[in-house]
Amino acid sequence: MHHITVPACLRPAAMLLASLLLSACAGKVAPLTTDVQQRVARQQQAMPALQGQLPAAPLDAAAAVSVALHNNLSLKVSALDTLLASGELDMARLQMLPDFSVQAGYTLRDRVEDSSDPLNRKDYAAQVSWNVLALAGQWLKAQQAGERQLVYRQRYQDTADQVASDTLVAWQQLADFQQQAAALDRADASIDSTQALLQRLQQAQLRDPLVLAQYADTLLALKSQIRSTRLRGDKAASNLGTQLASAGRRVQIAADDTSLPAADLVSALLGVPEDQLEQHALYFRNDLRENDIQARLLREQARMAWTSALPGLQLFYAREYDTDINLDPPSWQQHGLSLAFNLLGLVSAVVQHKQVVLQQQQLELKQLALGYLTVEQVRLSREALQMSHDSWLESQQRADAAEQIAAIRRTRTPFYEDDELDRARAEVQAIQAQVAANQARQDMLQAYWQLLQASGIQLVPAAVLAGAAESASSSQQQLRQYWQQLPAQIQQQLLAIQPAALASTSATAHPAPPLALALSTPTP
Image 1: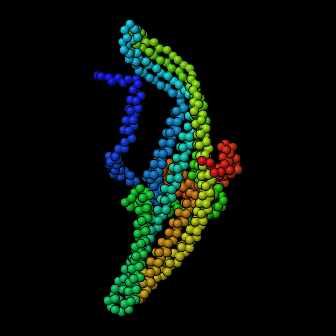
Image 2 (image 1 turned 45 degrees about the horizontal axis):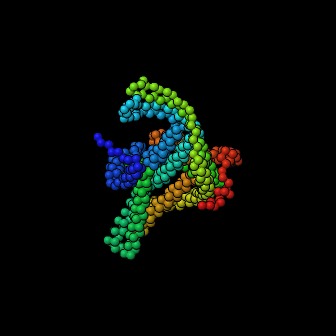
Image 3 (image 1 turned 90 degrees about the vertical axis):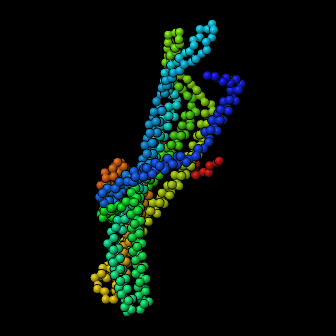
């Protein structure tokens, strides 16, 4: 084997050329054809596994939410984010431990005439070292990892609440349309019989053709309305299937909706004063609490900026071995400390601290803006719930009146084609009024969930969420009880808030930047 010897004067140029070649090769972008093909193959292979399993029994609202929480892919991704944050915390704690290193190698020398230098020498070493002054920075990193884990937990809870809200709305829509199936069939039968009567009258030529044509047009319009109602029911079934990760499969809905809040629970929530709901939202909204965690992270970054400027004091203890071909293997121990001070690190610490102060001012403004939007969202959500509640009461009265008219029309024996047409029209109008009442009830329930979310009240508690993630049937009864007891729990949470005590405690523990500093325009 031949070795190429590079002169000493050319070694820097050769190293520079080698680095340029490596960087040029590393910067070349490879086509994504193979990666895309592999991803598509994995996606197609995993499609059956991604379809969630549905229970054989019909689903009520609590069962549907449990299945959605168990099958939702976004929630599973959020759970993995939480696990990754937990692993990051474990790694940060391990980095606080002393470093232990073991090394082994040998040195090959050329034989030198009239020299006692051995041909080769083998070295072994085991060393424990600990950077004492860097421990503060490592401890702050562990604190930051714990804070980030808390952030991901808050996001996981938000994702679960959103999945529960969307599933409840979709379930209610499908349940309402399934309850109208018999009425839709009855309206279709009435329209068909009226159309048959008009055909007989046209053949007998007993009525004015213009009147018969107008009747026929009215019946076609009624049939179109019935068809659009059925299409809305199909769309509701598709929406629920998407929430349950079971698209393409028929979902069986239980006729019992006792797990959903009734009108008295909505009235109880409307009875809570608006300022108490706003106060609860400012204390317990997950996005606001996440900003509080981000503020603590920035304070820890400011401390880390100064700790990075401290000198590094390193304690070490080592045992080393050195062997050759002539001597017995000697070994010795060494221990001591080393102190290193990075002068440029002091300048960088000042710059980093200034950057963190600017980020704190920016976060303070975001907190103020988000708090203002939170209060506005609570106010608007409460107004929307009040309006939707009043609209539902009015639409329910109209639906009852339309059903009473349709019931009277059914009991009367028709004598003319006008009576047949009026009966068909009454059936369709009763269905339309009931559809409008159901839609108003769905809007009211959706506004109910939105007001709860805006006020920082969880739709799915942590215990129920843990059970639903493990099994789709382990938390249904807990969900029913939790939803039915929400007004009482809201009152307990509102009474537990002590603004003065909490404000003084938080101000003492973590003083926030002054509002005048946060609202001032930063100089670039």
